[in-house]
Image (tube, rainbow, N blue to C red):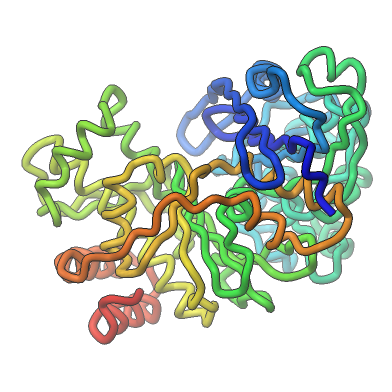
Length: 486
């Protein structure tokens, strides 16, 4: 049983900030805190200083705690595929290569030749690149591993969710030793791995002094930020899906069996109870808004954009070069078809473009035979925009739920509660914590308006050679035969 009198702490190591949330078992928020992060981008490279993660956590956790009740436990999520090298004590010796860092394309090709289905930005290729730069004898750490080391005082095993993009075989629950040996992966580079929700240790005295988290607080193995947001959405029953709109777009669902994708665009995490969480991460997202309009007031721009439904321009708003889902195209770049008349119409095109990409992701999942008959939930920073939520609902042509809390940190609080209790079903724990604020219904006449620009985007992606013809055909077929249910 989950301790009803305890607070549960979730930590989210995001791209732009560290966020901490303290909640009760019934979802009452007792405190929250955040602290900003900054990175370095240059072409396909994207790095962060890993020391900043700990500094930001110390700031955010003290803001969240205040006069908190006893804390039952905590878990940490991070950006999927973000890795660095550490020494034997868990201290960083390299910068962190972020989730979308694309410098290891050659290493990714080598890994695929060895039989490991990875994308260019996944953690295993970056691990090979780092070893080439810094030499053997070091240890690989995923983003949460470094923070957990500071919290407990010992380098932890990695959770299997973060280890997935490092090549970990979730079916066998083992590293693919033969393929890794073929790639020349040094001995002891990769950590031991445990399932999410496994107890990793307790907050040590030194960490307690720095963070304000009581010494002795249990630390549980977390999951990636996309999986954390999925737990926070309550989308853990088969056929349910969570769309996480942050800097980029992540779709995560639940299924009894893995969803097979020979291209590796859709991959499957494994829930703590052994069920499967298929999904994919696109490079399209809200980051395109900040890139085009760094000083804009989003609410004011949303209000102006409502006059353009649809925009005369059609956008594919990639945040950075390369696309990962719903197709793999390392050479892909963002584009705008047509000429938006002013900033408001361009803003509208970007908002709609994210919705079109989201619809194409769902069409691709349907193409693969994924179960899509459950509820859809919106979370992430983009879900703070009421206008964008309704716009996406109209474009998708299906209802969407909006929880009160849309933060991955809530998912980590639920996972901590599940792990400490040692019993029950994660979906049950999560659904008690998740409070649905709004259920949006699509407006049929608006859905019909967006059919033509969506088809234009599908055509453009196929013409560029990025979207496979069979997927484009299925997307157009579904648009024609079933325009209200993508």
